[in-house]
Image (cartoon, rainbow, N blue to C red; front, side, top):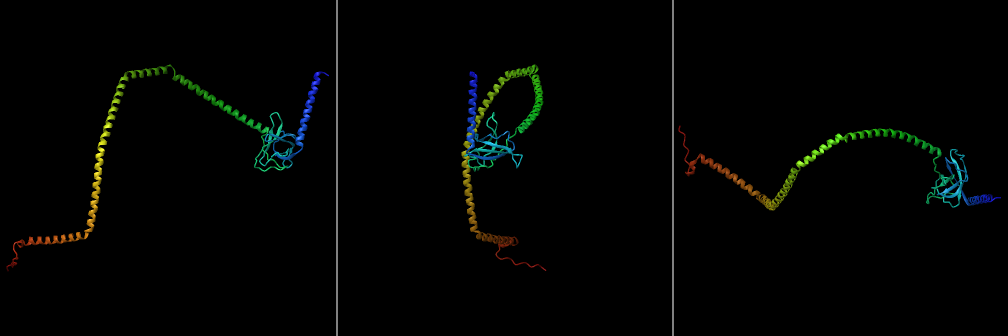
Length: 307
């Protein structure tokens, strides 16, 4: 036997021993102290008995059976065994997964919640459906169709935008052509000539404006001083007027008190004046009729009318 054959036989023997050891250890690990559970999916995705069961991404058991459920054939019944002590709880969710891209399908179980109740052996693990390859292919086809329509639409809009851009560039070329440049240059020359001829006038106007603003500031200051000088006498006059008004108000109040106190006497006086006026009227009438009564003490006898 050659050296190459010996090396090949040694390598094959080593691989056989390694494979036997791995299978033995896996069987020893999962054959004893395991707990059965079950779950249901509508899409198994190539899951087979012996597939790995991952709890939070950690190998925790294996799948023992994958078959259509007799009660509802539209669902796949999956039986599994996990190591005893694995904290499956009511919040844990089983779903189809992959250990890695190169490996076959596996059953992945989430860790759930620490506060949730632990599942008893043989219990049902809640499941979450994963998208099948057909569904993914259908969605990809739909996206591709929409993308093709979008690409066609974008191409049309790009053609329109390209045409508009060309028109815009043509207009810009027309606007910025030599004739326009000459007109702009002529306008600039006129502006420069205007600034050169009118610059001294503008400077004089600016100086006059500065002088005028200085005079205006002086005038404002004088007005402020005049207002300040007039303000104090005006305040004094207003204060004296206020005092006078208060005194007049007080005098009127005193007069009202006096009038109210002498109201009866005033009425008597007015009555006496009225009587005196009537007597004076009677005396006046008597004097008018008998003026001699002012000279004679006795009045003459009335003459008789002759018959």
